[in-house]
Image 1 (cartoon, rainbow, N blue to C red):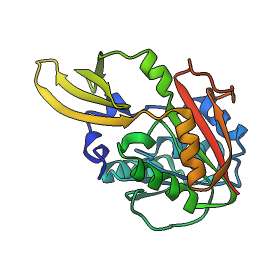
Image 2 (tube, rainbow, N blue to C red; image 1 turned 45 degrees about the vertical axis):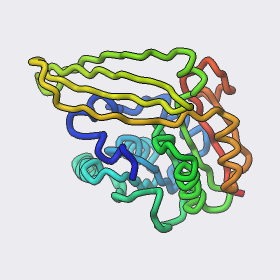
Image 3 (cartoon, one colour; image 1 turned 120 degrees about the vertical axis):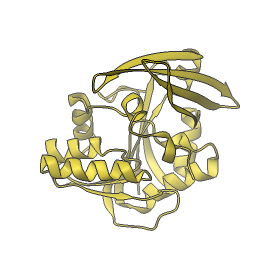
Image 4 (spheres, rainbow, N blue to C red; image 1 turned 60 degrees about the horizontal axis):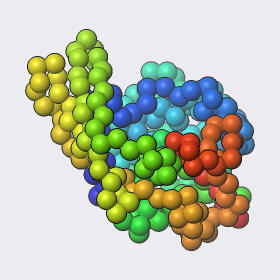
Length: 246
């Protein structure tokens, strides 16, 4: 089981989950072909932010999966509150059966390489392949490992005010054998430790990801560094793979 199941809670989510989906992100998904007729599944959907935004702005049919049951409850409640038609399910994508066939499967916001072993990461890619119709597309966003290594900072400190209370998150990171480990300690204004967990991320190079995608059957693999479909640039912080099931 992934460490991420217990890593994201009511406090830590404010430091690690995005609070909004940008207009540029919505436009990106339109550029790769998503429209109101599309049927989409998102792996590791968290609290459903992306799925709800796509359903609201593009009117496509969406289905989100995440291992964290509390996040799925939040996603379902948000959909009801906003009166958006979207489906969500609490599942482990490394060990789940086929639940439908989709035109697009998305793994966004660097959720894929949370598993430190290659076999489990391959299983996540296979899960996407299994759920795609012929000529369907898999959209995978990652941090660019070359950028992360070249701009590595051992200690980062973030401050947030959550519901009128000040919190500080100290992130202490290390890279060993292409595994990025980050210990996150969250304290309140009095210095009380409310959260202390360590997460790990496999730092794959672009060519390694392409090889793994090809291994499970994907082809026509394109790599982008930006939401305007810019060509891959090792100096950009993100890398987006768009591959096809042929």
